[in-house]
Length: 304
View 1 (cartoon, rainbow, N blue to C red):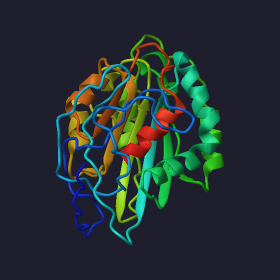
View 2: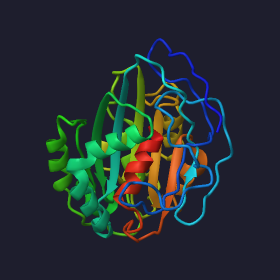
View 3: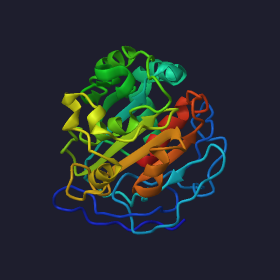
């Protein structure tokens, strides 16, 4: 694999814009062993896990499905490190907390206290270094069935200093409700996109991770409680515009979206249109039983 060129840092600390998929940015979403190494690697991921965090290069290739349990990606590859720069990463977890998600929610709870160490170990193994890591949670159900209880939002927690508070919030989540099959996942993504992202660091990553085993309802502001109407775009086109807005809160190449979601309404629309997205298709209604904790950690590491 050829090395990516070093790009000088912009004065305002943001990344240069780049699109497309460069070699070495993606691994298959198959089950990982105890060491965190994937049992089966994507054809596009061989020897591609050592690039440090920085802005992407202009190299690109066509995104493709990688078979059962695989992923679709449009992430740009990081370039070589620049000495003396500090790196800040914000991660927002959009977690489906309806009844069928009990298995994955139990896994998240069980691993919340070790999350910081596991992410840092994974990044070190990939030759990446992060100076500041914060996490936030947007837990979602279905506004149509659950009303105001459809969303639970946490503030950002700085890790490892606030790991106890992060664990307490996650442990307080209960998998219940949801009504019909589609859930309010797009609303959760919208709330994640408008997070109070850090402005610290010379280089930043804004990572949103979605875990759901159901398709998403179309956006419908009329179905939302009053408190959410100003925070959620009116339709999918407006949500897409917000994601792609180069002048918005999300950096044009610092943003990342990782979907553990069915290849169905809402999620397939996002993965086929939006930039900087990796989609690990899951079986609808399966509770994400095929996705283990190691896969989640490794996907986050690859997206930083």
